[in-house]
Image 1 (cartoon, rainbow, N blue to C red):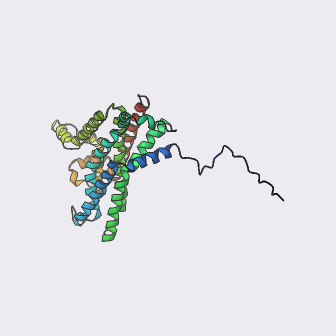
Image 2: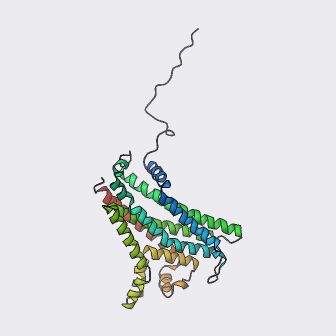
Image 3: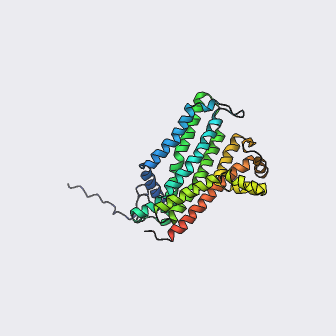
Length: 296
């Protein structure tokens, strides 16, 4: 006896969400992450970020004592001060050449052919870069915490978390600057020159050149310090110092103006919120200019 045929349901147009290809923001994040993880700049940057922490650990800086502070607090503040010089320059130089470099190489038209909106492509690339920039520094801070736990030091978890937030805010700020430069530049040479010029200007006005000139001109101290704190590098530097030295003895008389207007907690919140908002605004301006310009 011949068995009856098994009736099968006709395939429908609906797909199982588990097997639906990822698109949108997730696709752009995966694409940018996979591409950047194979690039030399990320490997070199990770080597520098983690290698600096290993170098500071091997030099025994956590055993030194400055103003009564020792252990991981001294190690962390030294590392953060060094990364303040490395991180912005690396971010703004590599990011400023990203989109304009793709346009010159003819890759931008291919990238924009993906089934995603221009907004998703742009901000997915921004978020992926932010994740890549932060991951080596977070790994270095985790390495310092593990080293402190092994050596019997008290691990300042609050400082580790605050330093991570400050680094994230500074990275967001300079990523926004880099994306804006890359959106408005017409060649990689122009983008590279503009990024270096902006970085040198911010470093020059960190607190030495600006404050010395303005104080000689007898400006109001609040005005002078307000201009200095508008510099994201100065905001980051002062916040990293205030976690190590709540009285800001290392900063001198300017500490009275800062502490009177902000307080310790208020200034740390400002140092995280201001660079983040500035970077997001500059990145948004870059997207506006990029979406209305000649994409290819």
